[in-house]
Length: 139
Image (cartoon, rainbow, N blue to C red; front, top):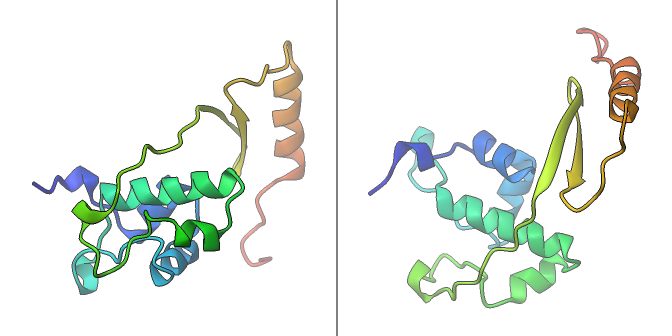
């Protein structure tokens, strides 16, 4: 049964996957992600889209090219029903996420030792100073 919490529009899917809307559309076009469900304004993505997007990103981060990922047996084609796609465990990793300034984040792998003392606060202050938002009209 479809759970409303597992339905995403393209902005939500892109945000959860850490990519742009354009990247989501490109991956669909290239067969790396299945097409969205529904039609027109009802188009949406579900948990399987997010899982696949994260898998593609993980494989890229592991050094595989999109051509290699596309050629792997997990490639999703329109004519290929989900039950015929071999399941593979998703490559997952844990990261610490720090909001340093509006629009600026720092991601640190869980196995990296964070600096002690006030060093992270100094970095955040530096980011707030040098990454200030662009005033409207100056874009």
